Amino acid sequence: MSEWFSVFKRGLSVDNPLTVLMIGLCATLAVSTKFEGAFFMGLAVIFVLTMSAILVSFLRHVVPEKVRIPVFIVIIASFVTIVDLMMKAFLPTVYDFLGVWIPLIVVNCIILGRAEAFSYHKPVKLAIADGLGMGIGFSAVIVVLASIRELLGSGQIVFLGTKIIGFPAWYKGPNIVLLFPGAFIIFGFMVAGAMALNRRMSARQVQTSQRCTIEEGGGS
Image (tube, rainbow, N blue to C red):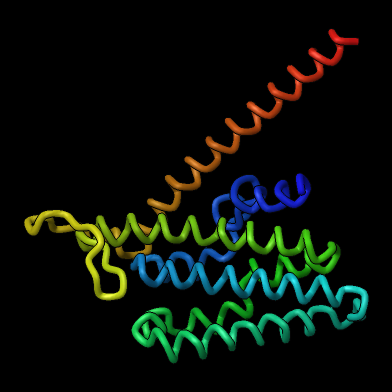
């Protein structure tokens, strides 16, 4: 369980696909103008990433190495199709907003990269941990980014037609926040904050490890 949690936790912090690995940024910046769209994009990525990780890991001893990439794409495309059809049927407004970015999950670097780098070489249990960790790590960043951009840019956050939070009526948000320059600026601050937090966590782990070593040495 400790190894499972360790793999899961890396996707949230030290191996976060957005703030650390810097992959999947195109979709992130494109759909993060609305909290609603970012939320469902995050759920879609979690589902596709986790389910494809399970299947890739399960078939890793069966799929020949020479054809692994086409097989990965077929597996990922199958789960993306499920998401695409379900969202089109039950969430048409969200589907219209996300547009082409749902089908493009098939070639998202996060999905294909984790299948190649991790799931194809690890047992199913750890593949699930990696898929969930990476998916939730991606979702957390895109949802926070979208919340900041929508609130500052439009003065409110709306989810499925319901206003969740908003500024007074007199507030007029700067348009740049909803454009790509604003997205890069806000995302840059988020990356800086994530790096500072990761450094702090690493330093704390080193101190804990040193303290344990000293205590063990003194006890012996």
